[in-house]
Length: 165
Image (cartoon, rainbow, N blue to C red; front, side):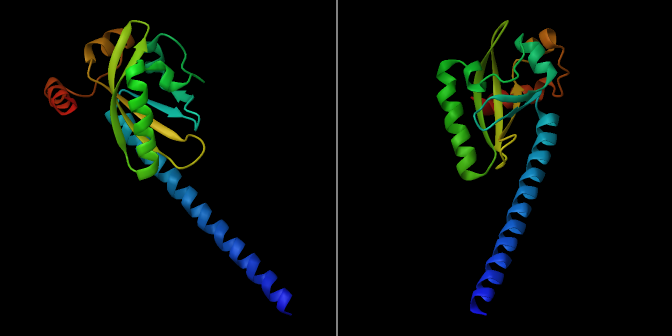
């Protein structure tokens, strides 16, 4: 009888743990979906990164601007070397704090480097592990080269540049 009671208790605990993990995954997915919506509204491009930091998905406008397909590219390798370490430290901070983090970086594009503000969240799930919204302060370059429809006016740009510096 005692062995049966232990078995029933182990099964109950296992089911309880599975329910808790399922709820955590649903919560993480909800956060990821909400952040994608917000990033898609505020940023010019959204990039989904795997846990090994390879691009799982990138907006078509970003690929047009960069001049090549980003699919399966290691995202930090697209950055200027001096920005790579800062970006990786920001990812670590996003993971450990479970909060939204932001870092300015330069991406190497076909037409030269472009400064963007990367807004990053760790989803806590395997795919996509990270979501990065990219907000450019170089609106003329993005508008002319990629045809990106900028959602902010000159006043907002000046305010953003003041915050970034």
